Length: 131
Image (tube, rainbow, N blue to C red; front, side, top):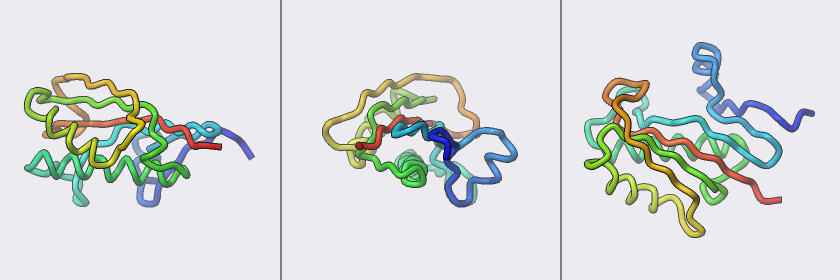
């Protein structure tokens, strides 16, 4: 069995087939999670940024768990913000609700747009599963 494979959680096969990217990729004990946007079940972006952030971190957790990892295994995170001044404080609060010490490395990047119209935040992460 290969020590390198895509991770495709239940319900994500369509995205893998249509858009040609893996929601996550596991190489040994390291999991690379693609950027997730906090859309709702219907694919729309919630009006409230708090709901969007909760959805994004839930999606991140789903991808990690499908790879055999958890939020506690996250060692690096990058977030992209279309409205950095307005969302950064709320992002930090949502992040701290799901990630505890030791805190991962984190880079926040301001940008003008994300792949889904109306989305304000995207988050990607790398996790290392303990031996």
